[in-house]
Each structure stands twice: as C-alpha cells, then as structure tokens.
Length: 288
Image (cartoon, rainbow, N blue to C red; front, side, top):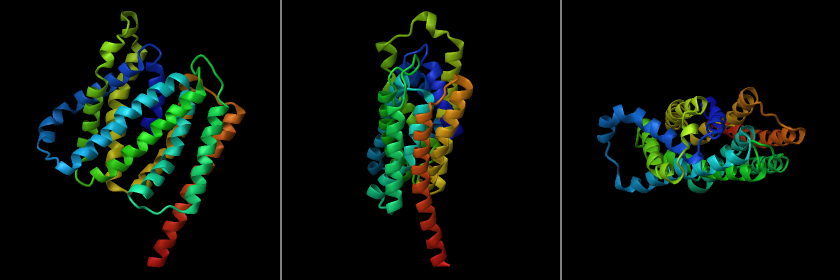
C-alpha cells in the first residue's frame, strides 16, 4: 500500500514532461522486461480454456481501463485528492463480492458505503482549481471510475489465484499493459527536449519496477493467501500514504472543507469495516 500510495506522486511528476499514455506504456514495458528471466517458467503454465475470459477480463480492468482513467484523473486533480478517492475501493469490492461471489453484506456495510460515497462527492465539489489541478471535480470522478475498474480486477484476481501463481498474473498484467498502450508512442511523440528530464525518467523507472512489479506482485500474493475482503481492507492505507507523500514531496495541501470531506470518507470506511469485524467475531464465538 505504501508503494501504491507513492505511485500517485510519481505519476504526477512524470506527467509534468511526458504524455500520460506514454508514461503508462514505459511503466508496463519496464515491468515486462523485469519479468523476462522468468519466461521459461511461465511457458510451462497450462491455461485452462475456461479461464481465458477471466484472464482477459482481469487485464482489461487493470491495467488497461484502470490506467486510462487514473492517468486522465491525475491531469485534472491533485495526487492527494485522487489518493483519497481510493478509500472507496474496499467498499466497492464488498458490494461486488456480494453480487458475484455471494459474500454477505450487512446493513452497516451499506451505510458505510453511502457515507464514503458522500464524502468523496463532497471532496470533489470542494476541490479548488490550480495550475496542477485545473478541474478537480472531473479528475476525482475519473478516479472513481478507475476504482470501479480496480474492484473488477480484484474480484477476478481472487478467482484466478486459486489456479495460477501471483507472479504469473502480475507478469501477464504487465505484458497486456505494454501491448495495450504501445500505440501511445506513435500517437503523441515526446519532444526531444522533454525526453531527457532526469526526475521524470526516474519517476517512470520507479513506477515500472517498484510499483508495478513490487506493489502488484505483493498484493496479488496477498490475495492468494487471505480472503479478498480482508486484502481489500488494507487499501484504506493508500489515501494516508498519498496525502502524506503529496504534502512532503509535492507541497500539496487540503482546504478545511476537503479535510472534513476526507474524514467523512474514513468514517464511512470504518463504519463498513466495523460491521464486518463484529459479524466475524460473533461467528467465531458461536462456533466456539
């Protein structure tokens, strides 16, 4: 979650001199190159016919659609606000798990979900335009769409980790993203004077190695070992890291209404998670 939270700052830095779609391509390409030594091992994996659609759906959700929405979001809003929107993701996963995986959802889960949505909406409305965030309302909405894609990715991932290694699934995401964003190199070429911006290049390298290989690899491994609802709860740490790093590195700050809106998001998340925790403890006591 620390790596994922830092990705908002790295993307914001890279976007200052490079086209967003090109940044995503090089991020995916770097990750793919890092996985090349494992290619002989991956070629031995036999993919079941029935899993082809699930694998395609997983890669379509993330990285393909997810990074389109997130890249465009960070062009319009701050890294801190975009990071705050990610607090909604665990609740989206809980709703999706109830509809698709038939996991139970309590009334408290629903109340928490509505509170978090209201907080995200308030956060977007209270956003003020600036040089680095020309249209925060639109940017935050795009980040919300990215979270819908992320929820779809997590749910399909959970199904697939029962049959495939997390490392293989992470490598597949990197390869799919490389191929999907390859046309960006020819549609919007980067000017020569901007191509060698050292800070932006280091940010892209960090995104491809530490974030794409590291964060996705660690999370995919985690999802393979614990329930998806438990794994998604850790995503609540992303806004904390994103806001803290946005303040320390980019000098971003929140207005008073945005702070209150952010608190409402967290209250909604805590309300939802508290209901789930109480329910799980009650079940354990009954079994005992």
